[in-house]
Each structure stands twice: as structure tokens, then as C-alpha cells.
Image (cartoon, rainbow, N blue to C red; front, side, top):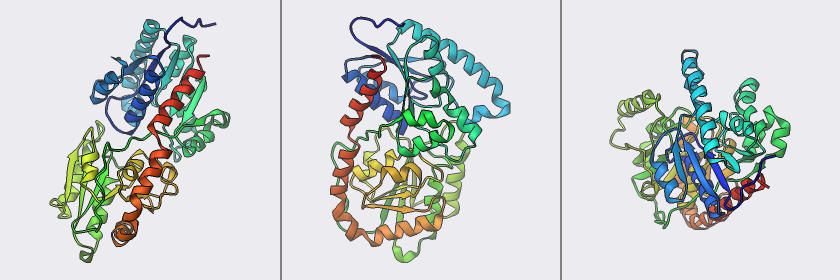
Length: 384
């Protein structure tokens, strides 16, 4: 039986990156919740990045160690040697860190860190796995492989009912004991109201990873199909690619030039703070081609007091349920997205008066304070 130390509880948090995208910000809020509950928190990251400063400002300690992070590129046969090497080095590093800090519990931030539940189990340290993945289209074998490490965890949290449903396809009993904890989503410190009357140019913004599955190219294609009678439509794209996806950035830029949109579409790169870009826009667009476990950016758009156009699928539908200023369109459908843009412009006088009340509702539903307390309570419970 593991002996509980006297005094302050200690947690180790494992996370697969050091940027400031959706899952990174959720993990940061989890750490803030743990620290606010009185815990000593050590965060294990595979690399340094802008997230580190925020974690340290929150009162956590950060250690950068070798870590196996499951990426699709590692599963290709030519990369199996690197996969094995990463697994060995990651296992040894996790073992050393857990021995050094002897935590009361381990919080595993995503299912892309399959070794951490095992490492915690070997040391008889209770762990909580936070499931952010929802690969509904994956085969049963792939789903089983993704979720199997969670069987070793004392507790499992999922970020949406959709994510729990995908988990249930692999391990029904595991999904039955998993609890949904909706993400806490922070809004802007202050809001610049949307324009009372829509004027040209109409300004769209996309915020997120540059990748085929996220679909920023769909917005570019949709803009190119809109009739001149709708007026000038501009687009800001805020975000960058994963390493290895540089080809998509190049392809996107080439397509923008080919369509003659280089003066209307701006690629702004990654920004740790996105509210200036949202303030400068009229409409937020989330055009994901594939299933999303949740929809942080969609919620952020609502919190900022903007109409949101969102793929009518998966966790995006769940995150924006009941929001009157959200317009949904068919995933991976340029014509449907173009129709949604047109609808938002034509219904502007109807949508604009509802934006403030919808922002207030989203703030209550996805409260940061609620999330921090709830996730801290879940982790504390497994140490008792």
C-alpha cells in the first residue's frame, strides 16, 4: 500500500507539447486548478515553448524530458525505429521523474502519452487520464490501441459526450465510468462589440492549426465562389503547422495566389494571444473536415461576441448547442460553407443584437472557475 506523505499533496502532470493551442490551454487551466487547491505541481513536457512561461507563472515547476508522443508520422513503417527509441527513452525518463518526485497522483493530459499510465501503475501511483481524442472514423483496432492505456488509470475524464461515445466503441465499461468535464474556456479581458451594421469588407477569421483536417483551405475556396453582389470578403488565418506539415502551408499559400486572393487573405502565423485578431473580425469560422472532440475556438468566438460558423459535426455541435448566433454547415463542403457566410451577412441585423446575451450564456456554461475546481476535485479524489 502506497504511503501518503504528510503535508502538501504533490502531482505530476504529463503533457505532449509546449505551445498554446486548445489542449495546451486546457492543461494550463488544469494546473492552475491544482495549484489553487494547494498542490505542489510538476509538469513534464517533451520540449520547451511559450506554454512554459505560463505554467511557471501559475506556480508549477516544469521539467523537459524525453517523451513518447504518439503522432501519425511515428506509425509509418519507416519511422518505427524512432518510435521504439522514443518509447525506451520516454519510459526511462518517466520512471526517473516519478522516482524523484514521488507524487501522490499523476495527471495524464491526453491519450497521445501512452507510457504515462503504465509508468504510474508500475510505481503504484494513482493516475487520471484526461481524454481529448475522439477519432470516430478510426477502425476498432486503432481505437482499442489509442484507449487501452486508460485501462491502467484510476479515473478517466472526457471533454464531451461525443468523446465518451467514441471511447465506448472501444471499451464500453471504461466509458461508463468516465465523467464528462466540459473545458473551461477563457474569454477576452474586455470585448470590442461587433459592428452594429455590417459593412464591406466583411472580415472573417480562422484560428487554429494549419492542417487538412482543420480545413482552413475550405474557407479560401468558399470565398472564391461568393458572388460579387455580396461585396468584398476578407480572411485572416491565425495559426501554424505541426512539424512535418510544412507542405500544407506551402500548398495553401499557392492556392491563395492561384485564386487571386492574396490581397484579401492574410496568413498571420501563430499568436499566443488571439483576441486582437477576433476583435478585428466580424465572423469566426471553424471549418473542421473531421470529428472534433470539443470546440474551444467556437466557444471563444461566442465569448468574444461574434457570430460563429461551424462544421455541423461531433464535439463542435455539442460545444455550440443552443447558441442562436451559431450557423452550422456541412463538413468538407465548400458550397455549404459559402452559403453559411452569405447567411451570416444577410442575417446580420438579426444576429448582432443577440451576441452579448449569448456570450454571457457561454461564460456561465464554460466557466474557468467551474472547470478548475471540478478537475482538481477529480484528481484529489483518487489520492484518498
